[in-house]
Amino acid sequence: MQRWLLILVATLSLSSLTGCGYNDFQKLDESSKSAWSEVLNQYQRRADLVPNIVASVKGQANFEQDTLTKVIEARAKATSIQVTPETLNNPEAFDKFQKAQGELSGALSRLMVVSEQYPQLQANQAFRDLRVTLEGTENRITVARNSYIKTVQEYNVLARSFPTNITAKVFSYPPKPTFSVQNESQISAPPTVDFGAPKK
Image (cartoon, rainbow, N blue to C red):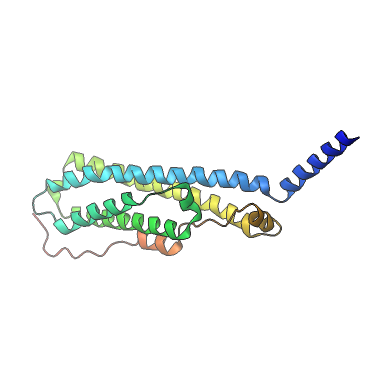
C-alpha cells in the first residue's frame, strides 16, 4: 500500500511539473543557449576575417588610415569582452557585448563603403573574395541572431505568463535579454561618408 502511495505521489509531482511549464523551461533554456552559441560562432568567424581584410586594404596606397584604425579598434573591443553562459541572464553584460558587436558592424560597413572609391582594391581578387566571405558571414550572423531572438521570445513569454511565471520564480528562470530593436536599426543604417575627391 505504501509503495503504491509513493508511486502516486511521484506521478502527481511529475504531472504538476509538466503542467506548470518546468519541462518547457528546461527545453527553451537549452535551446536559447544553443542558439546563442551559434551567434557567438558567427561573430568569431567575422572577427577572424578582420585581420585579413585590414591587411589587404593596407596594401592600397593612400587608403584612409582613420577608417582602418576604427575597424581595428572595434574588433579589439568586441573580442576583449568575456562572454560566459551567465551573459544570457545579465542584461547589462549582454548590452555591453551587443554594443561592441554593433560598433564592429558599423566600422566594417564604413570600410566597405570607402573601399568602393579604390578601383585597384576592387580589382584585387583576394580582397573581393574576402568581401564575399564577409557578406556571407554577416548573413549568417543575421540568421543566427534571428534564431536566438525567436527562442528567447518563446522563453520570455513562458517566464511572464501565468501560471508558468510562478514556476519561473520558484526555479529561478528570469526573462532573458535579447537584441534590441534600437541596436538593430543602428547596425542596419547605411553609414554617411564624405569622400571628397575620388582617389585614383
